[in-house]
Image (cartoon, rainbow, N blue to C red; front, side, top):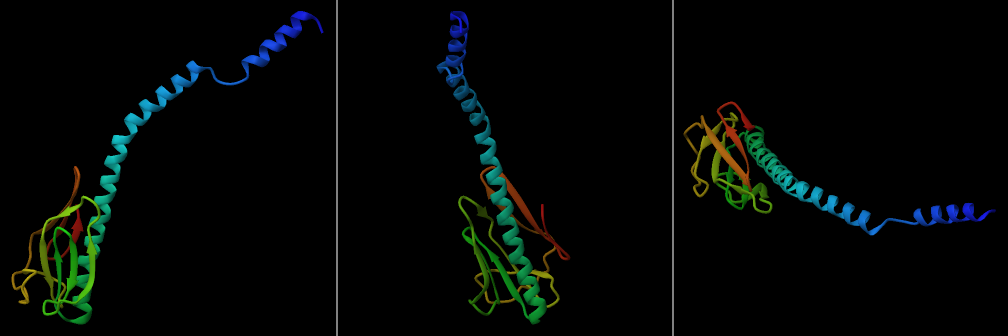
Amino acid sequence: MDKSTYQRNRSARHRSGGFTLIELVVTLAVAAILLGIAVPSFQGMMEKNRVAAQSNELLGGLQTARSEAISKNATHRFCSSTSGWIVRTPASATAIREGTLQGSTTVTGYCADFRADGLPYSCTCSSTTVGTALITAGQITITAGAQTRNIRIRTGSIHVE
């Protein structure tokens, strides 16, 4: 092997050994910029998912109160508060189903009595008296950070907006 071929092969071996310091710094800078863009949107997505999960949990509680009232032919009460919610009968403090809020999620207070006909009536959670006024436009608002969802309670339906 002549000297020029040897130097060319030796030079090629040294170049393929790894990254230079400049390449490493540029890669880290690009990664930092991408993380700076991705983290805020990831937090927003997490808040949105937290509100969706809590909305579905509350909706499940409302549906439980309604179905228990229909199946047991007795009034069942759904009460929400800032710390969670509970399904029970108006005369009893025993919970049929209850849930708690996660993290920084807040819920506006709300109470509904579901009678055997499955329709929602207004009530007071601290009272043992069964509600008498039919709810035609009730709402529960769930908030986590900048994300908000509303559960609308109407005479014939309960749905999330």
